[in-house]
Image (tube, rainbow over all chains, first blue to last red):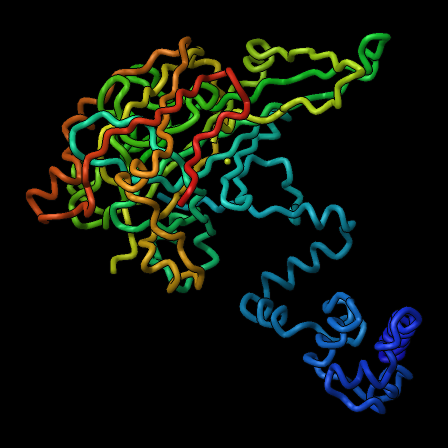
Length: 118
Length: 370
């Protein structure tokens, strides 16, 4: 997992660096507030990890989707965790039900206005 | 979808519109209902033209705020919207025409042809506090033609209030439930429900296909193939509020031109629309309510348009004797409160725009400049 995340970050950063030198390892690390050596270890997939906040900053800096980067690093964003924690059975069941649906079908999920007793 | 019931009749919330669809009845059986924020017309005995719509009231599922709303609301289900005390509202019914391109009709003169399918008709009943807004009767789910207790979506683009006389309604005005002003309280003596209740029945598939055949429209080569397929949409504290009769307004509620047998009574969708006092909206939802709309006197000062709607082929129904006897907010206020409606100054609308059914697709009933 860490190796995949690190490789993805490095490729993306180096791709950006070809057009803009601001994407050197040192400058990216400085912008997101970590030591360049830490970012270097992350990119090599060494046993270390970034906090959710730093991954969000990294996603923003590299123009990547924050949820994708979090998933690659083996994390789920805290707001999604909070949503699931509020109704754990409902969302666990929903996610299991949706697991095998194709993307276009998931995107078409609609929510019914519930009618009650009146 | 997760439970595999995709084709069931249902109401969805799409932005701030209730979307009704009946795919099991007909592929084209869909329509939307929205609730427009409008200015409150003066409650002074004058028959005013139609006021504008400023914006859709925001709608949210009551289930999303189950910790902050009364238990009875969860029991009722549905959605909720915010209104300030003494604010006006009108309901907008929007159908949608559909089209199919027929490339086989391609020829020398036309690049292809389009079949236009007229919007699907619905019979719609609207109640406030479970009091029918056309008859004043207690809520029931049957369709009744005499006296007519429902509207036909293809004939009636809007409903602004209670049908008190032929061609005259009294505007829906929000008042706190329990203060005695609402139609529900005046007619039943109770303050149990508040809000709005809506039920819609689609036309039977066979009736639609018999009465509304598609129209073929050839597309010349010079055209850009951009037919206007839409739209009949002539438009785009205490927490619990109800609706009360406000000022008088010229609006016909049109007779059903179809047979009662054309309506598909086996299929229906209904929704309870709760009304939250705007002052409580943020506490419940965390979102800001819309700003207060312009007062009628300021609207008129700026010369902004009022509206009159004509449909030469449609006949208005009679008003309800029960609803006619209701006291308006101002009349009731004389017994209860010296000023239930602040800023009730009379106006003389000068800029009146005439709207006609079936004439143009780009007619809108919207206010601007506020």
